[in-house]
Length: 351
Image: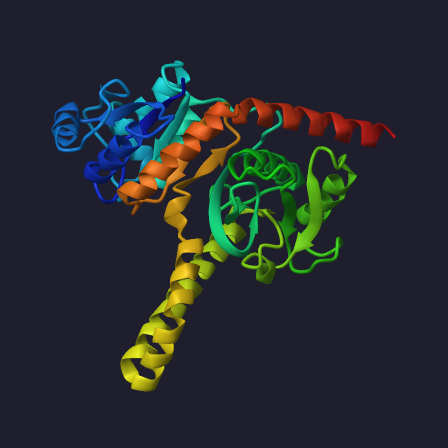
């Protein structure tokens, strides 16, 4: 039975949303055990108004919490009993298998770094992000691609990019049920020689790896991300964060322009009415809440980072992702993949 430690106090929307999502999941088929970490008085009061499986949910008291506006390092130092640290410590001690939080990204990452160890072969960890694409993949018809890194590690070398690729491939294979996820490096051109020296060297190393370890398809450009050309897009955190924010901004702008057009002309409004079924289908296909969260990869324990503005539904789905990761033994599989990659690289160097 998988146990998920949930930082119940970190969300922008407050513990009400987190508790509601966890309570709903606790009553579903195949639900994990849940440990809600936070102010016990508040959490007990919320559980009274959210129907849940009492056999599946318990509370671990944490007297303080880190807000979205807090400076992560100062907050963790000043609040040693905060919910995100307590939740990470539960995982470290083996009282839970995986961590879920919608809290301050910097504080969540730093709590993991202070509590967990890095896997062998990982110089820097990576924060994932999921982005909807036009191509669907895997057994569950998943429309999302995973972007690594999305802002955790700003500057990387070839070793980091190769490790990101290996970890991202292992994650996508288990969470998206895609046995052969297509992995690519984000660069300024599709040719193998394009990009920074780190990208060029990482491309060479990934090309040399056995195809049974990773389905590396080479470099892609930014325009290939929404097309779904790759299932895992590997880049430095500085670039990844900029790309992700730009893509989010473009999507929001398109939606605003559509609403503006509908308000300004009856003809446009009629046209939008005809397109509405297709728009609803697109919105459903690209609904990020169905995915719930994205991973922080590279530690010997897994954290699923949910969006700060997550709804109860998104939090519930983040818990589902975490549960699947634990049940499919994601971290041991990443450890093994990194070891095989290092062995393959050593063999190639020896030749």
